[in-house]
Length: 254
Image (cartoon, rainbow, N blue to C red; front, side):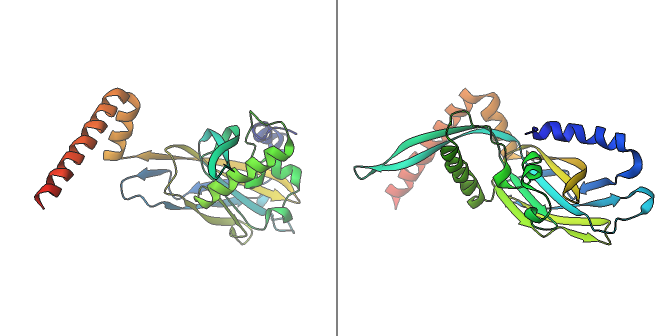
């Protein structure tokens, strides 16, 4: 199976070879920068754009659009709990080298009606098609169990989202879709990818970058924790002791 990044790199070259016979995408996103402050409860991003057809001729059969919003990749370790002698303890573990911290996908129709399994796997169209790069699993059944657990955990946290059928295509040219950005997202560089699909084949793809960053006091604390970790730890301990002492003093006076 061709890795997804190679497929994306090969796509522009293939389009160039085919000349002006293939359509192109002109995408955009409502926010190129998302700022996280103390009151941040998430964001609702609008992904929109246009399909430019050669000579303005639209195909007889309408095309499909799939949009994917993806966050920075992380290395994550999953631990499975088992009850031993009435006590829950860690049992099997699995480590994934490249799990996206956030993944949201929307499409004009259910993915199964747009592309086949192979194409969906190449372009990671769906949470069940993510290439998580396991580093500690050998058996396919074990891999499937831990991957399903990771997907379920992040879906319940709002970090993995699928919205099939919500992409609106107007006059076969303009498209738009809204995807939620969870309040639990991490800072970093995100990508908004758009795929144009005709007859089960991805014929055009385009990417827009989105930056998620902290601001104000949150940014100061994050920077302090990263660059002055020792001082940050001492200040945190001092603040905890001070608040505990103050709470005790108030309680004695009441």
